[in-house]
Amino acid sequence: MIGLFDSGHGGLTVFRALVQRFPHLHFVYLGDHANAPYGNRSSEEIVNLTRDGIERLFAQGCPLVVLACNTATAIACRTLQQEWLPDAGYAGHNVLGVVAPMVEAATQMPWAVTSPQYPQKYNTDSIAVFGTERTISSGVYQEEILKRCPKVTVIEQECPDLAGAIEEARPEEELDAMIGSYVAMLLENTRGKAPERVILGCTHYPLVEHLFVRHLPPSTRILSQPQVVADSLEDYLARHLHYADHPPETSQTSLLTTGDPDAVARSLEIFWPEPQIFEPAG
Ligand code: DGL
Image (cartoon, rainbow, N blue to C red; front, top):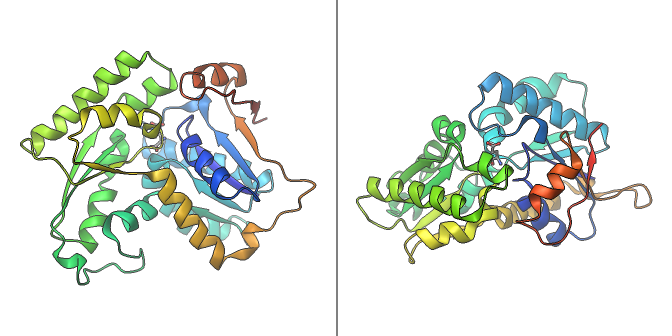
């Protein structure tokens, strides 16, 4: 079984793409709705909450956990992979994030290649990144893209209240007005020039991708994080076959939440017409 973790609703966009891509695998999704949103929290809180979420998923029998959350990935993933996991007594377990696959897709360079190579060395595209306050202030997208493509322009725009507003299922007009203003701020920074590509660097944002499309210039292409993560996981599993194994009679795809399962299901109704049945994480 493979675990997916997010602060709340957002990682479901990745979960759905993975369930569709790997119908033969079983996934357990954990949304930390009781503590969402993470986007404005301190690094210490994000690291601790993310570690708790990973341990719950390990305890559910998931040796591999994907952090389907840009904020948790940007702030906690490297620390947990390097400083916690090796000594925590979870031999054979691993944690993956969602930033590396997006950087690879945006730069067309493998993560392992960290210096500019021809032809990407001469790539002069502009790439816009929308994300939570903590993801944008971490600078991770800008740093990792520019390492590989130094002539690319990376324009970052934080959207401090958007993930929380999506969690609360605020009315579409309100979400539309927020996104309109974030896109306007971004275009003010580019002096009206349309970026070639956009990274929606928060897994909540694909739930309102149509509103981003409405406000972005028509020539701007959105890189789909759920699909990019599915591509990347496919490649990873082909190299780590044991994570794709599962005892069929015991494994089941399930949705867990640290919050109130009924309230979570209700607030997802406007984004997904079919009911999302959550169970308490326990
Ligand atoms: N979905 C998350 C992300 O990708 C977290 C948003 C939040 O909790 O603020 O960043």
